[in-house]
Image (cartoon, rainbow, N blue to C red; front, side, top):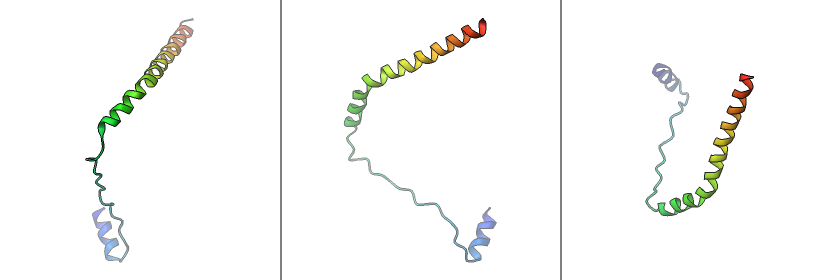
Length: 69
């Protein structure tokens, strides 16, 4: 692959290069606000997660019951 890139660059064809890494400064982010938002979402997300698990278990139980019949 390196030889191909060398040949392309010698032929005058532009060789794509990787974009420079973007560094994001997170020193000014208040992570307590992030934690507060996550804690506010917990009462909504916990019942949804339990309902999804219960639905999955229920479907599994019904399918095993039908297979055994």
